[in-house]
Amino acid sequence: GGPGTAGGAAAAGEHVRVGHSDVAKLREAAEDARRWDSKYGGGDWRSSMVPECLRVDAAPLLLASYSDEVGRALFGATAELTRLAGWMAFDTGQQEAAQRYYIQALRLARAAADVPLGGYVLASMSLQATYRGFADEGVDLAQAALERNRGLATARTMSFFRLVEARAHAKAGDGVAAAAALKSAEGWLERSREGDGDPSWLGFYSYDRFCADAAECYSDLKAPREVRRFTEQALSRPTEEFVRSHGLRLVVSAVAELESGNLDAACAAGTRAVEVAGRISSARTTEYVRDLLHRLEPYGHEPRVMELRERARPLLVAPA
Image 1 (cartoon, one colour):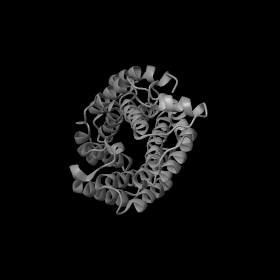
Image 2 (cartoon, helix red, strand yellow):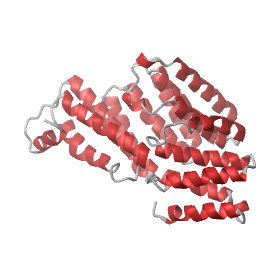
Image 3 (cartoon, helix red, strand yellow):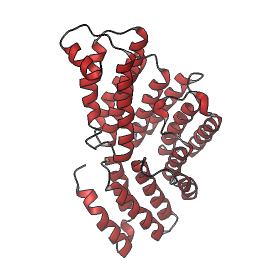
């Protein structure tokens, strides 16, 4: 039976045997939720169904009986869902809840004997630490993911972990270490091949995504020329599928234009970012817009800045 039926039976105390089809349904749920989250942000009602899916579908299956092989697959699928619940909590500003989910996801990945997935959870924890201003902790977590996966993970996976490390170095203001990590991330990405057997959860990671994060690194390092170079590449991503990252990139682009003295271009990118942010439910995107408006304060008397602030007002007064 499906997760729902297995769950009901398990709750009733009957003897239930979990099969690969049950695990496949959990993986499908994780995949759907991941796509939805990229498009609408972690605060959308569909995203909030992930904790529900964990409680109603996954938890009863974990209590049922299964072979070792199915058990590992079940722990892995549940770890993916739990990591995703953590990521959505992070995106909507619920930092403590995010950490709880991440720690649980680490335990589940360990039970699944899935080292790369455990690394992905550590990388997610690293991004959260970096975003919250704990860059040194961010570096440690990313390096832990790299250490554990040396010789185990695919080239694309290693590239992503190095990119996450670069983000932390950049936030810490260490330009040399950030540049070295970016160079390594790009090298790993160039070595990756279609038939490598990359994990499904890495489907979002492309060269465009690498460029987008490289732009954020250089934004933190106040290197507007590099930001522009990478942003042009990053904004070529399909907007509909990755609405949130498109919004974040537009703000990074606006800040780079402002630091290069191009107020017109900064306001144009900012206006597009506000439009994107208004379509999704993401505290992180709103925070980026707020930061941009703060940087524009010295130009507050300029009509185009006043217009941008006016457009952003509904976004900033809405509850996060």
